[in-house]
Length: 135
Image (cartoon, rainbow, N blue to C red):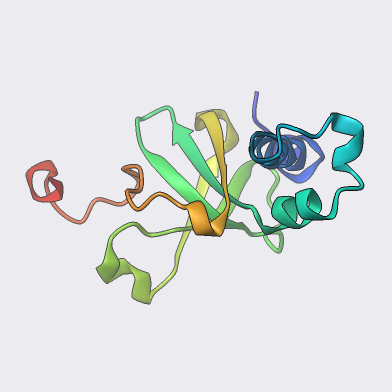
């Protein structure tokens, strides 16, 4: 289902936009859909929203996508920078390359920067130690 065109065509951008629009509509329930395009407060809120993207793999691992690497020519795999979860790994950069056929789900979480939850979901792509240490 996921392929080069899904990520680099319109579909991925549409999914991120849909998530952001749904958050904005919840924030402004009094506006009808046509008023959203002209309402300044709505548009400012919508533009401020951030998206977190989590990619789930067939092997059970998951990765938070920080940035797609467009400079990599291969179209048979997805190459991206990962968002490290653990503090010691934030000093460097993880670049992952995964075959498209191993991707089973892509989730987009849209949130306003001022409303971000403090607890982040467990992203299993990079484990620094045993499961007991992570608790």
